[in-house]
Image (cartoon, rainbow, N blue to C red):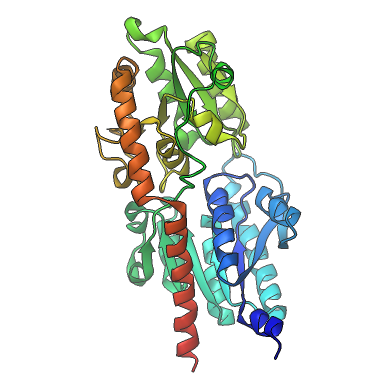
Length: 391
């Protein structure tokens, strides 16, 4: 056998299933992970719906894409879950057909709704299956069932892992999210970028980064900034950077609320791919999400040297050392959030000290290369165990 044939024989096919549409935290996680998988002898296939941003991105690089039934965003209404369940059955059939006709070594589920599909397909076709648990689940029984029959689950935080019950709990490992600490690092303020972010570029810029969806509770941030005391309020502005995933009405409500309460001190920038440049010019990053796992945007802000204020959602206490590398606020405490922003806005040395501590915390504990390496090692371990059990 030639060296080329030996190298090809060594490689494994991994099918990554993600039926989301935007490039949000989970999808950006997958994009980062793929480079490490390929470097570890995995050929990656992305299974995604038609029109998926992740699938289109992977196809544009020459990667193999398995198109699953369904396309377009689901509307924000009560029958969404029923429609998703119906689509999940169609996805399972398509995935089963693919693995039947294409040698597949491992299935990796990257979104909540795909966990049962991937776990059942793996169990019935004798293929290793791994679930990535990105956030606390709204359907804990389905999560626990899927984790029970999957080969392994990987939770991005201990609080997410705690949502798994039953036999699947023993097969759930915690691997925290990681970020590119070389790309996301502090830098000198850029007047042009600060003028893009704020009408008061020489003032204090508060950033709210990420999806504009109801679970992010961005209205709390608007209220908190609008309630700042007069001695700091006039120098503080708020910029929201992001777009909605499937709720344009909520996005419009937030834009109207920001302009109504903060007037020219509020700006919105749609989702963009130069967050590293923007975060170098954000002074305080605020995160008010209620349903999280471990916010990539929060890690990126900390790695960029931002002072961070965050509600105590999943993953927050595992990242932020309160009053050292950020300020943690009880969920829903708008006055507490406003006080924290006011304290940081009035104390540039405190912002600098917290930002430096945040950057060091992420560099030491949440570097992408180390955390992605942990995930790849788990996948390789699952395959090794599967191979040993069949001998």
